[in-house]
Length: 319
Image 1 (cartoon, helix red, strand yellow):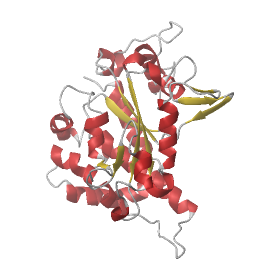
Image 2: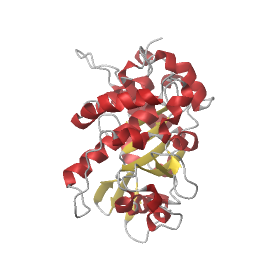
Image 3: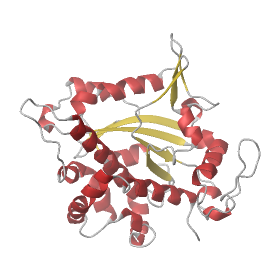
Image 4: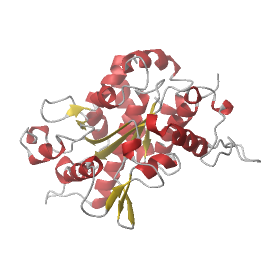
């Protein structure tokens, strides 16, 4: 059987990471570190990479703290983009063979109904969340697992979506996927993941966004969703925070303000090391807590069956 539309989406998501200079420069070093952590390339070893994402990230962390305790804006933004990419790579490789795909926010890849559903409207001003990553879990329907070339789907106007435009070889991924999501929106799970390297400076941002998405109504003229789509109509919506962190772990306590700010996020609070009760969970816990419904089996089981294809079907992970 040919490639499914979800595996094409996953491949395009990962390839887009390798299109950025920062990720390309970091990857050879990260790859070497990852290889030492998965010597047997077993499902458990790949799954447990979630406990070591900070170690992997720090092999190329160029964000040097100045004498005044600050970092340049370019160092902060560059490190943040690389952290997003590393988390995206990790979550996707753990979801191969499943109906969950993680996308670094990209207009070319995010289906239109999803973008519209997470839009926040403040009067006439339209704003999107700081959604560094969007994880989508699709329903167990034939179109998501069959050969993408055989999909027949109508758009919202009732017209058959062409899988390719005349004279063009490129598959119309976004158009076909948007039509499928429009049809199945009530069965789609949407998980927004905000990724930041510095927890202390950024904890209030996910707290406020999660409050906006969780509110039933507002006294002011604020609404969520547009073009007929809203997160309230999706099967499930969560908002999560994922940090490295770049400061000493010992600085975070159950009672720390930064910890309390994200303690009740709908999607949870995660970091790139082992879980610490009452503070943050390892990134690997996000898989079972938010992305568990993409297959009948657990992640380790599906990973075990798919990992033999790493050098062929999933060669785009470059591992």
